[in-house]
Image: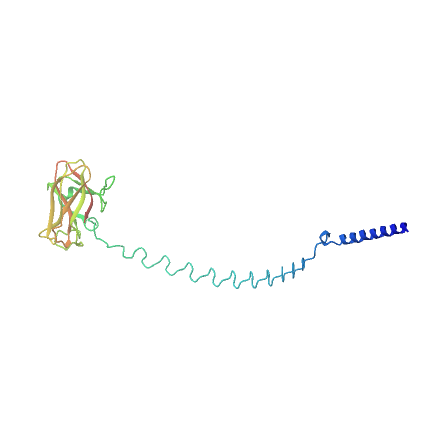
Length: 262
């Protein structure tokens, strides 16, 4: 009897422990399986967003790379008259429109009048176009080397006339108004040569005036001289310039250059 009771208690205890083991085995906090979350890994369209990778026209935008007239814009590179602007570089009088007031002065004596009026020992006068190594002043007109060799008259000279041979009976060159002086460079071959200079053919001529320097002793170097004509109311001038000198036993040699009215 006691033996049977022990056996029964033994089985009863074993049953209790078995049930406890099953309960422990079913404890949620001891399980290794994660609790499923609502839609975990199955969210609506997760990884399958609408048109993901296939957005409407993705890579095929309307006319992408084929915009209307792309690279062929109307007249591109053919703009009307491009490079052919009317009168480009040929504007009327370009560079010559009203280039300041033009002055008649300085007015070269040579070219307006000519050294043609030989006087006195005219057969003893020579005129050569010999210039200094460096022309003095503005270098207007012609260079002159005059040689006067004494002859029967014992003197000589030259007038610059217009027209040629006009000793005052004819109208001379038309000289614009406003000139105040006549300037020139003169020098002697050795220095010490005596020469006088003048402008105008005389009071009895058509010029109606004559202004003289009187005798000048020349230097051996080019020297500038000026004849003041500011008091003269000139018009047409027949005798634009001149010189005269007394004859010497030794020929008188001197030079003239840059003779001009201004």
